[in-house]
Amino acid sequence: MNAAKLQVIGLLLWMPGVLMAESNIRFMSAQAGAELHLDIVQSPLAQALDEIADKTGVLIHYSALPESVVNLTCTGTTVTGILKCLLGNKAGLVFRYAHEFSEEDQQSRLAEAWIVGTHGDLGQDAPAANRSSLSGTGSNAATRDSDDTGKLLEMATAENPQYRADAVAGLASRQDEAPLVHDALASALSDSNAEVRAQAVAGLAKYQGYDASAVLQSAMQDGDVSVRLMAVDSVGDNPALLQQALGDSDETVRAYAATKLEALSAQ
Amino acid sequence: MKKIPLKPVLAIMTLSAVLGQVNPASAHDQSGSLGKINTAIDQYQVHCFDDGTGPNGYLIVAVKDLAPKAAPKLSVQVIRDNTATNTTDAVDSDASYSPEVSVSGSGDQYYLMTVDKTATGAENYSVEYHCMTNDNQHTGTDIFQLTNQ
Image 1 (cartoon, rainbow over the protein chains, first blue to last red):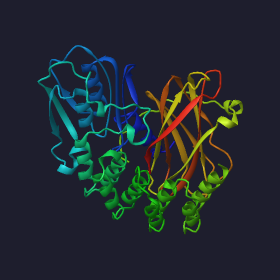
Image 2: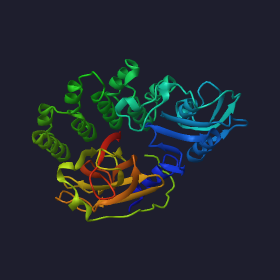
Image 3: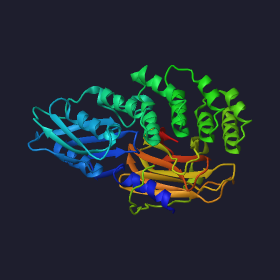
Image 4: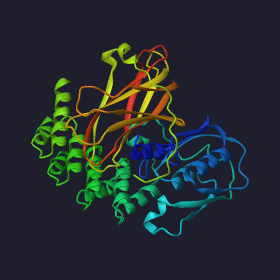
């Protein structure tokens, strides 16, 4: 097993990993820009906070917390969003970001959090909009935290192309924040970085109520094979677009288009 | 993909005979592609549930590296709780999938499935996945893509 593959496994097992230290608390995340999921079943709030701290490396400080157990599911793209979902409006939150990173990095460099001024039952009445189920599909599984969307929109214009790609991927799941999200995705189609453009193509292709045929057709003319491949990947049941890809200069694109056409004809 | 320290992988188990017992009409496969950067991954959440056949007992998975023939090797990892298991298709563009791997589950279960490759270069793949009961019957299976690169 090579290093790259072990790194993927390590990534998924470590901080952004699927780990279940306790059987009734589950904190799962994928790579930056994708979903974080927190499931708590009949567990004390302190235990959930310890689990988040343990898995993310963020130092979380708290003193007196309500002793009642919590039942909650939260989703988000940042630890900040998860904490806000968990605590609702029943506690003050103070965040410290790693000082060596710039403003545009802050949402992914949370270093420390303090929970202050708690009152009432926490976690029982978190905003319904933040509740999510792991069985959700598409945009239904994304948090509606507008602060996180705002940060993603900022990150979509970051200098670092990886941040931009992660942000565009994250925005693609926020279908209910249109038209700002749609505009950001459309703008990313002309990004200088191919990975950003590819994520924009994928995002617009699954944007509800939006006909992405023109986007996909244009993306199939992109100079980068990754963008063209993503365009083919994003084509649904449109054989005309796939036929277009059969004439691509890259064999991988042609082969994938042929595979999808074969699958369509078999339906 | 961020670079992080490695951790040991705990393989659970590998089965090789189950596929023969699976009803072909119930098979699930997911085709996809990975962009040219070496760190490109696709991630899926597979949900196994009781569709009336019985509760989930395990998930079996295999991956096939599709044409054209290229340098990168394709692999799929399945993670549930604190264990991960991996299988790699050693031969590009042949008719065979990688060896199957099995990850145990219980009842209504979610698994994280990641497809990745060993080197730079665009790749096409097909992943076959089956949610099975403990008496080797195909049961309820849903899939949702989390990451598409």
